[in-house]
Length: 235
Image 1 (tube, rainbow, N blue to C red):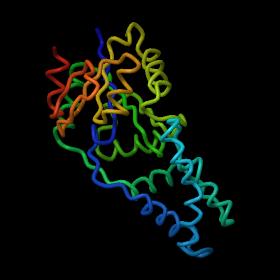
Image 2: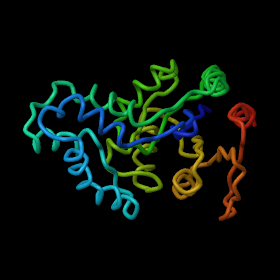
Image 3: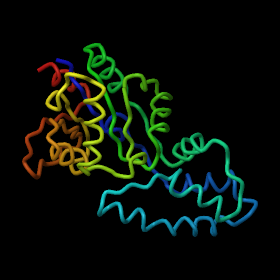
């Protein structure tokens, strides 16, 4: 039977180094707006969007930066919009976040592919799935993943059951004959990944490098080394 693995992206497939929101906003300002307003005025306008970020903590809604905010900056400060918003999304993302790829992840993905395991990504992000795809391409691993589900594209984020169900439905459609029971979910965050995935009945592997407690005593598999996935899948 074909097996499916759904991966979380950040601090699972890619290791987070830092995230500085204002670095991306400053890049946007320097690229398009420094001739029409001050940086303080620009950042002051950005702060008007803070309620959107607070709201998502409660209802698991999501902000898509390039759709929900960036166009409003161009309207507010009366600056002509760029032709390629997709590229701008990616450029801002690369200024805000710094990530890296561990070689153990690359070798493990390669081994899983050899076993004909179909792989997907389900990620919380204010950036689109296209930008995530380009990021993985830059690291040379985008070809391992059939589809990337980014919360920015669906206006909803993990641990929402709805977001998981969107991914599950798409994956089942892509893989006739596969059942939900054939899917595994791998993620590092206990609430968004472990609780979220188990709440919709996915078998879950917790990538628990910090050896945190399984507070809810959920029936899951725990690993602290990405390479352990290969043995887990072979069981």
